[in-house]
Length: 350
Image 1 (cartoon, rainbow, N blue to C red):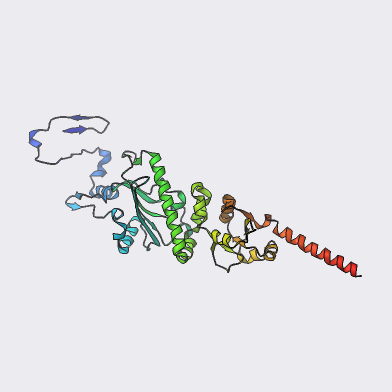
Image 2: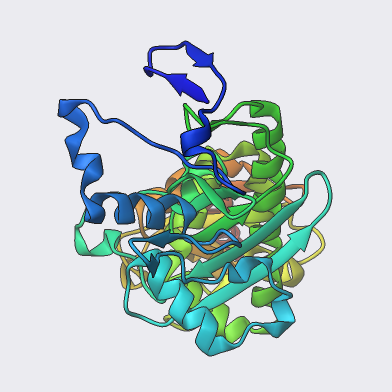
């Protein structure tokens, strides 16, 4: 018999014949008065569902099975139906919309990881409900280790909902935290790269969905990532879209598209910060760019301006504000020179 008072020590003594059983183990717990709530069936059921809802063996409480959900993130991604994904998404996110997109994958390096991520169709921060908590929970062998973990994805990914399961993490159950922070760091990098790669694939293969559904809803989070997540800054910058002086209102282009349209001699990417497209087009700085037939990226918010200041360059080209480009000054000088030449010609003819 293993016995302990719960204060850090224990004793082992022979099992009396009167309580001996043929197979299995019996556990008897004596609760302190201040812990009497743990004798409440609803409290025990809540704890079991929180931490052991997906374990592979059945858990019964007063004859009723508690863990009835399937850990679908361990299944072959091709075998999980859209209806199953929709139901599981609603369970883990506590939301009632359909997911905009799903990312279900496994990887063996640098860690054994099985992950299931959902992108909701909308986020709640735009409704003034405050900053969202992380949306991904960490499991090990289907046992919950940390709900809504802030460690496994960067903060700009807080709109992502889902689960991550890894058998490679050594765990400290008492603290509910992974012991090896280096392993968690490797996991974080691998998962972040996977999410960015998935978004890049969406932008390439389903551009309309990316621009009209994902980017309009979550573009702010990507821009936040550019400003805060230096390691992911370069790949994130390729996922940004903006209006430009040569496009129509509401027409978005990537910085890669802008660069592909630049004349060979243009070494900078020009942008103009204005409250609206109408005011941007009316800006006196646009006269020089119009005459030189150079495209200008329009940005309308402070976060956009902050993005440009943090990026500084893109594909070897400087990001240059229109009001500091010198294009307008050069145009003015050319105009003044033309006027001087015209005046000189008039004087000579007289």
